[in-house]
Length: 356
Image (cartoon, rainbow, N blue to C red; front, side):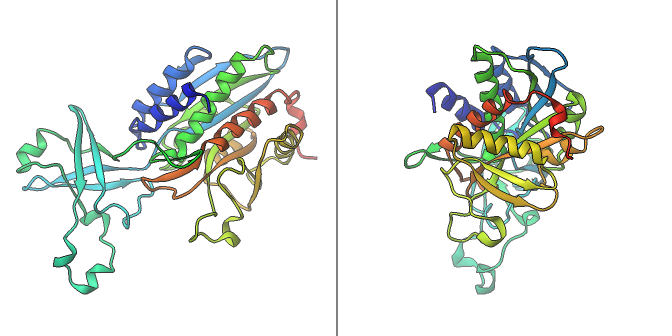
């Protein structure tokens, strides 16, 4: 991965963006694509980058990845200055105790920790139980409620602390790869298309959507706005090359073996075939999976927007999804960008995607 792209990825995942509070990450995305795409945004917070193609009656293609991440929200401050919170998206109560967090307040960032009773003081039965999120609390160091309220407000979002770090080889870890990895791929495809000498035969709309984690909301409104003929959603997928994940349910998905191309009811068969054929011809490594029902991604709402859209998914293998230590392989991001960019040049007629 080129140095400038890695710097963009680092900035994107560092920017806080719990669902409904995506503006910091969206500003990073917007700033990156502005030099090579016509950029707009909407009232929900989705950001669009458009590159017009060449030719008459061009197919309209939408590429989407969501920028929001899971997080927490301050809901109550007790008399001693401890913050009680609710979950934004699918937060695992097993993982939160002992985590360092950052409250994104109007006055700036406020560091905190999610407290936990010392093991020495626990009853034996409590050591094996999970404390409900509603009973967990954040300690920001405030002496009392008044002091805490000078720093934070009810409704402030909270993210897990930490930023992108390199592991061995091409592996990196961070919070928020679900799905800033998708927004990253969207931006990189726009950049490569803009830099190419040959113009696309389609009009390309690259979208960084919002509020996916709480109901595919930005994907719904952005699909209606763009009204695409063809849509490709870039998401993350469960890697099954860790010891405690069942391959029989999730398939055989490995880091570093290329992006995943799912098949199923949410996927247009002709668009899948085009992606798979492009990968084979250009020797781009890909993996395959089966999803026999709705995918739970922006592709799901895109497919049934207006009078229907030919949709596909390109997924990045990810370990430890919805934790502060998600892990992916940078080569899978690069291969996803290469695959999608090459496929766009092969879309010549929207009628090709009507099942017959």
